[in-house]
Image (tube, rainbow, N blue to C red):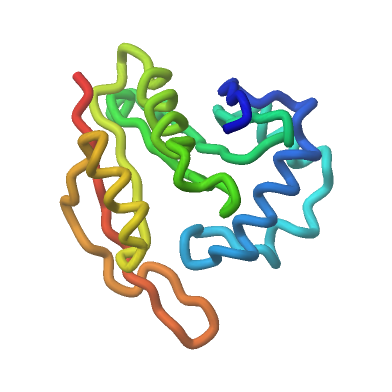
Length: 165
């Protein structure tokens, strides 16, 4: 395997992030609340701003950006103890090498001392993703029926949480 490094993406990473994000939305539309049609028209500046304003960890090899995961911490007084994992994606050619696990572990480590639990939603039929999340300790706590609609097809999501403190 190529050497792999993980780091928080910055505004300078916007072109690579945009390419990976749009690929994810195109290839795995049922895995994301956003759609390719909504994201593709966004400017490079908007992608750069997202990277500055949010916490996105990238997995990089000599081939470039091959995976990503977002971490959001609540800034509200009553929910500061809750964080969210979002936007998890690893390119198909890079799957099966533990990159997803490393990204997820890095996001958990970055959650910070205030965060007691992390939450995420995963498409109910995405068994490989569900197994990955379960393998690091996430537990299903609810099923949201018809959480997403793509064309005429509805997709349920499994809501999961990890207690970290």
